[in-house]
Amino acid sequence: MTEVRMIEASAVSERFARGWHLLGLTREYDDGVPHSVEAFGTKLVIWKAASGELNVLDAYCRHMGGDLSQGSIQGENVACPFHSWRWGGDGKCKEIPYARRIPPRARTRAWQTLVVDGQLFVWHDPEGNPPPEDVTIPAIEGFDSGEWTDWVWDRTLVPSSHCREVIDNMVDMAHFYYIHKGLPTYFKNVFEGHVCTQYFSGTTHELAATGEPIEIGVAEDQPTVSDATYWGPSYLVDKLWTKYGDMTFETILITCHYPITNNSFMLNYGMIMKKNPDFDDATNDMIATKMLASIGSGFMEDVKIWKNKARIDNPLLCEEDGPVYQLRRWYEQFYVDVADIAPEMVQRFEFEIDTTKAVDFWQKELVEKAAAKKAAAEA
Amino acid sequence: MHRVTCSRCGTAVQVSKNSAAQTSIQWDVDSSACPLRAELSVGDSCPALSDSIRDAVLAGELEVQTSDL
Ligand code: FES
Ligand SMILES: [Fe+2]
Image (cartoon, rainbow over all chains, first blue to last red; front, side, top):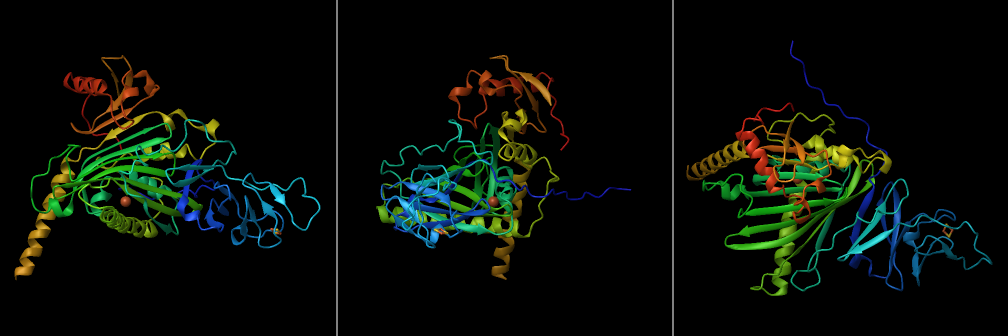
């Protein structure tokens, strides 16, 4: 009797990942009012103090539970809408206007922040430790040089999935064909320490459908060349070169998320584009906006899959699939205590996929589809 | 997994290949043991190690075979 494979799925971890998580762009907080974000199973308040510093606290006031994000900014502090207790960015209550004295234990949870290239991050660690020095968010070279456009940015809520789903994308070579109208010709992953990289080169359905021969296994000079790295559990920097005709657009695409609950997350994505000197700033911004919109509709395809798929701990893989198990082993490091990080979770692992069969089959399929479409149109 | 020793630095890593183009490399020593690592970006494989892997295949020491998935 042949055995049937069953899907296994353990309960979702109650814990949220240790690491830097991007909440938004700093420019979002310039409007003089406190902002709220639901994250890490609670609500946070973000405000820009008079001094210009961005602060993040638990939103629920430790006095009587008021929502600080509904309050107001008073100088350096945020004032609760319920009884106007004033909280500082360090988490201490600084003033209770109607009281003679502040209770000595009036302290709430302050989130350590980091601002890099106009992006605001908070550090989350279930053990309560500060970030190690080597765990940080890299700045983009030349960000302020004027050579790049400003951020174009968007976000989308993923309502019923654990953020492991978005991480799985890192190794999922075939889904780029089936979900994203791409055709990977070169695909490689490396995991090491808290870093996870994907090298991707490829062409598009449209170009492959012409029947023009595709170079397999070559990393350079493809219509799409991408060098993408997760810095920790949630922040992906993708250096992306996209060809349209004889023009190449160089972009830096950020894909990142923060967990809302352990079964929902907010996907943030944004990009800057190297300004093309042939165009003025407005045109460059417009191109970047269009590119991001098309990337955004690609994410919607992922979200559609995630909304309907099963959580699966034991994926059944073929040789053209990427190293899902090793990726998840890497990802696990962010969910265990630092003392429990096993060597295998952080030791270097490299994996290159053989795309020969896939590229050959996919191009044939696209050429046939294009021919059938043409025949139907002529009939 | 088969152990391949880099002919340049002597570091041994575990390697498997399920086709000529597919390669899987598991390090069980710190990658700083590779003298070229510091100059390479994280996603780049060490070229000397890649050569050693190719040599191991040519010498018949590393068999290209279907892996247990
Ligand atoms: S609940 Fe915030 S001041 Fe009372
Ligand atoms: Fe995807």
